[in-house]
Length: 71
Image (cartoon, rainbow, N blue to C red):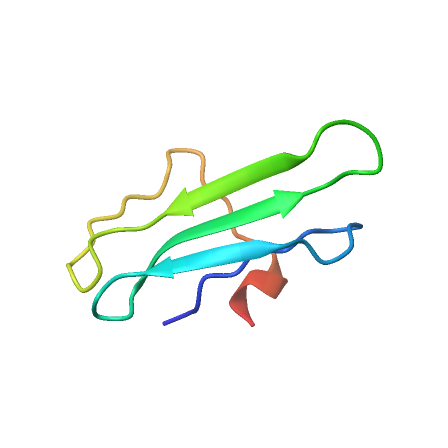
């Protein structure tokens, strides 16, 4: 089981906040990215259903992910 992560290529470290529920599960990650030009970008990811079984189907045209995703 992996931990939630966010990678910002070519950018300095970005401020972020994480919200957990009463059991300590991460339920929200909010990241602020300030590019060299343009407005600040904010991305919020929410998660739910921790501990519940998943039913995942590969997309019809799925390919193999890059090796670094498996480390």
